[in-house]
Image 1: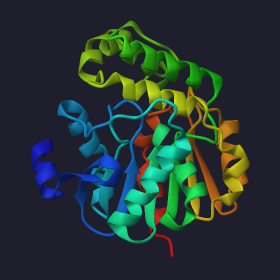
Image 2: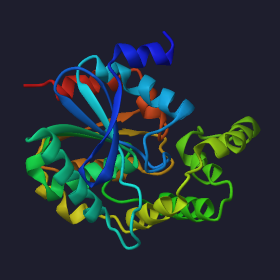
Image 3: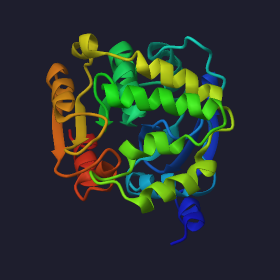
Length: 272
């Protein structure tokens, strides 16, 4: 089925929550909030990025009304992850009026941890994918370099893609693909990328993980170039009601294509 037909079948719709948080919703059932990763600009994705998001979320949209939510455009300098979590908490409370399931991928997973720690009343269950209690040095450096390059109008995707998409061995074909795709993934408002990169650079919630009361599932890849297995384990160990799953040989984004990913998420979110 083509992506346009799939989107129509799933009742796809776009909108804006309070604090100007853009979202794409699809599927039916109780709400599941998907917190997007870093690559997209602070807007609903367009073109092939939109198609990729719809296809990624379609298996979950068969069971939930999935709301793919992004950060607000016009992020102010000095904004912290805690500030962003506060915006999301107020927006989710206004939209849903009660706790909802939250699934965060990469940067969205870090935001999900902050949200659940600071605003436990808004999170029913939490799934953290390819993220941990803090960024490790490689990831912090890549995030800042990506934001700076985007702000200067230079090709930036390659600065992130080495850890996001590649396997352990990089190839010339992968590097060329990243170079060609860069203009299509470049943010129109690069200041947002810079401000969020700085917020994420300072992110470290290790001392607050015990405040998370929502049942939590942490999913990581054994070959994640940005987060170590030790980081995933430490994150899960510090959350009172948590479970850790590590997928062998999976990379940072390879986790979402792993055969067990959708069944593991569904089993966790639908558990009584």
